[in-house]
Length: 260
Length: 261
Image (cartoon, rainbow over all chains, first blue to last red; front, side, top):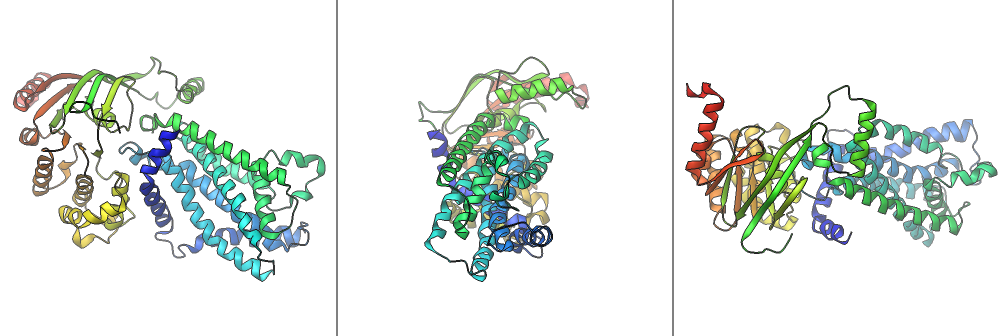
């Protein structure tokens, strides 16, 4: 594993260059350009606010529903964008993989970093919303680094795993959007965790995104039901997912060029 | 990158590389699953549907040599380049390479058609392992050599295929590799550019090593110090360019009499 990290460090400029490429290409020949990074979570927030906040009256406690939804959709959109692009990254760059040598994990990593750029853009709106809804901007915001880094690791791990699998089974391309859609409903994005009936709540915790999203929301809005134990567990699960995804990817990497 | 022993930069020892040929459209589900498991578990490939691209190939390349590889389509030439550049791995045998590799294996690989010429130079440079600073230093030379000054800020999807290959070759040639691998790609450029490329490869040869795959036997004769002739996955002959090329041409005539005409 040490060798992999040394090699990755040697190729760090490539990681940067490919991330830039991802960002540039995604918004080339679009009219709205980078605004899309903000529009995606914002549009979802709007529709969720209308359907779940207004029509179905989901109880978000004393947090106004729009910022309740956005505070989860912000990290959630990062997760889905990164995984959707990351899962396809190796196959979509097949012409590179079969022609040039470099550590292949750079491909899913650059997809994740490009999605992180979108996340940073969309965070600006989040800050504006925090001010608008008069939520205290305290030093607590710095604690967001804990869920953000955990989500980043978890996302990278899932992307590594799926991108390697997608080389062997192209079914992944069709599975990913489906799974992500189901996953959204299995995660407390639209509804708060404490609205889940008590006897099912422990089931929710098998989903790592539950505590990751909840702790992001908790740290940002200073409210919620996440315990220190849950946060600790989610960090461990994220690190493990990353390591397992990385190992699987590196073991399979050798056949990529032959199979693509 | 390993430390160099003696003055070999590339050595192949009894290298065998097999590829799986696909089963066609109606592969049985059970087959798919067992093959999938095999791929996941990285077991040794089993006998079904395998084709050997290289069989027990051994050779060594010394520093400063310009090696030409010739042979018919599908003989295993590109597989050798891919093994040297670490893109793929042998099933049996050892491949050792000492030094930084610049591989120009296919036209346009590593170039992205939505990006401009300038952006592509930085991207492709990074893919070849160059730092941004290095690219900045060589930027003008690359642009000059590729002759694309006017189109630097045009997305390369608007480029002609000649411009594509000039851009690709230039970045490769200036990425300062110890070993330059060039596959049959010069065919696209016009005669002038081909000459320039050959001259560039020739100038390389004093301190670096070049491995050149081509069907252009005149080019091979011009710049190569040694030629390897690959025939269905095995080295058929190697040595001085003139004699190996003669053997190759004789073989070709035997297998397809039409060439006599």
